[in-house]
Length: 210
Ligand code: TYD
Image (cartoon, rainbow, N blue to C red; front, top):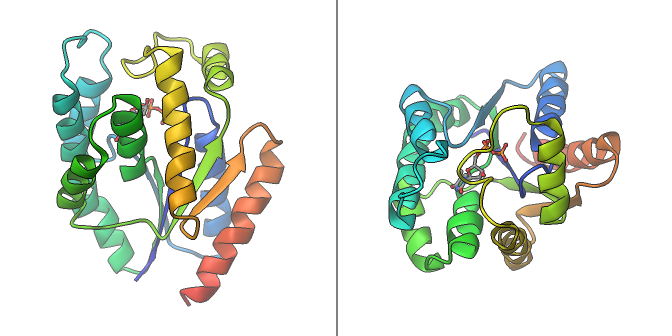
C-alpha cells in the first residue's frame, strides 16, 4: 500500500505552497507522487466544487453542504486516491475529511458523530496515514487571502471571523485527540522551516512503509 498524506488548516495557511514543494521533493527522490485537492480533483468533483463555492448560493442548507462535500469526496476516493495508493504511490491531498469536521462540525455546528458516519460512508473508511495542519489565527489567514486574491471570495471564505476562528479551534481539538496522525505546524514561520519539518516527518513514514 502507498502513503496517504492530507493537508489541513484555516484559510490562508499556505498549504498549497507546502504541497508543491513536498511533491517536487518526493518526485526527485523517486516516489510516484500524486497531488490533488478537495473539493474537486475529478470531473464530477469539480462540478460539485463549483456548486459549493459559488457565492450566489446563499440559500444552501448545512445538510446540503455536507452531502455535496461528501459526494465529491466519494468520487475522488474511488476514482483517484485508492487506485494510486493501490499502486504503491504517495497521495498528497489538499484538504480531506478533517475539513468536514472542522468546517461543517466546528464551524457550522453540525453533529460530529453524524458527520463521521457520512464521511465513513463516502470514503469507505479510508483515513490518512499522516495529516499536516498549518495553523494560524483566523484573522491572519483571512488577511493573507485578502492580500493575494484578485477575484471575489468564495462562499466559505465569506463566513464571519467567528466561524473561521471556530474552524481553527476545531482543527486543534481534532489534532489533540489523535496526536499520532497529526503534525501541527505554526504557519507563521518561514516557508523553508515548515517544509523541512514536513520532510523530516514524511521521511519517517516512508522508511516505515518500505
Ligand atoms: P478552496 O478555495 O479550495 O480553499 P483553500 O485554498 O483554503 O483550501 O475552497 C475550499 C473551501 O471549502 C475552504 O473554505 C474549506 C471548505 N471545505 C469545507 O467546508 N468542508 C470540506 O469538507 C472541504 C473539503 C472544504
